[in-house]
Length: 189
Image (cartoon, one colour):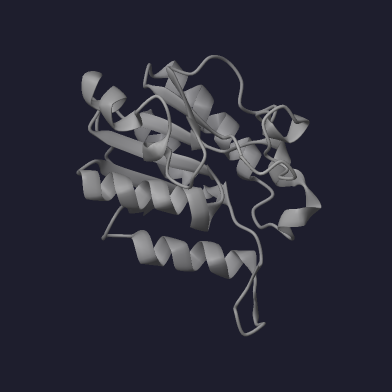
């Protein structure tokens, strides 16, 4: 994917890159390069003075790896520095967190967002769908997201790689433009 044109400003939304997602309870993951790519995106967005938003899932379930007050609730080491906005959420979409992401983006004149993080088919996808419905030019940086193996209700295993690809196919040209990290980095200059 070359020749990508990105709007300016473009906010990077880093969704739920938390230590708790390394817990074995989630199962096998795809994309071992996700953290490196998120780090490269953070550096590039900051270097080009584009807004950066961190989103953290504060689980209300006491036994969750993402429960407030546990080490799993903390951001992974790659999520460094101060964001322009920190959104705390308890559900899948960053648009249902606090402070209100939609209002913050509007107040700062941001009409375009790029999403990376965890999990591809849960919080990243839900945030992308809502962003598209709200009218944002939305980019999902698919290779800077992570998915996990899933089981269908009938007991069929679906590998994380297929989950990620299906999510990208479902979102592309409908709710978001699905891109890769190298294209975004190249477009940022």
